[in-house]
Length: 253
Image (cartoon, rainbow, N blue to C red):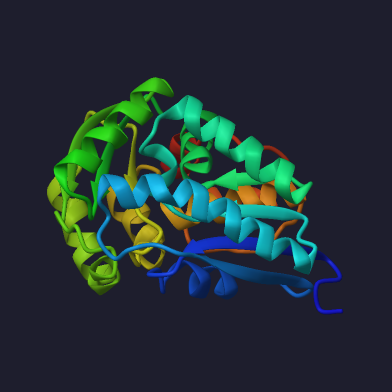
């Protein structure tokens, strides 16, 4: 069996063509990823994001045939759109279905920021204003203030994949402020992982992406060190005895 070390169950929107590829690029030997697609429309409307609750559960029912040891719900906006309490309950529902720990991207995002003492964050998203406002509220409910927010303002979730890493880099440079403790790059469909390391070096502060935070939480839950020396200090922290504050690590580097 290829998944002799660990088996990951990934639930990802049918429109997403970024997250699965990025996760496979990071998994170490002995770890497998089994994916179930979440049926959804292309437009990230309120109705589409709410419907992913039911379609996500259906996808979870399908992926458990592969006997995953952790399940990841890989959609940022669908997991924060209805609020923090809803997301916590949804993660529990998925865990009950699968019989193993379940993680959502928004839950991983909040935990990564909290565990690294981020209280004020600059955010870059591909979302429209209504979704951006829901993200602000979600982060605030988790004790994290959004200092500044830059957006590509796209409703079509397939188009989110058309945003290039160079576009992400430039948008962050336009958005970042001195007051923020860190930067968060939203959406599992956006190719942000490729520029996280570069942005941390250039900005001198922690940078988190949706996929990076999701994969970090998956490996942390499994107790697996993927042996990564790139993709940001958050991923490198998995190789350290304890997860400390990223800002201090970056400043001393």
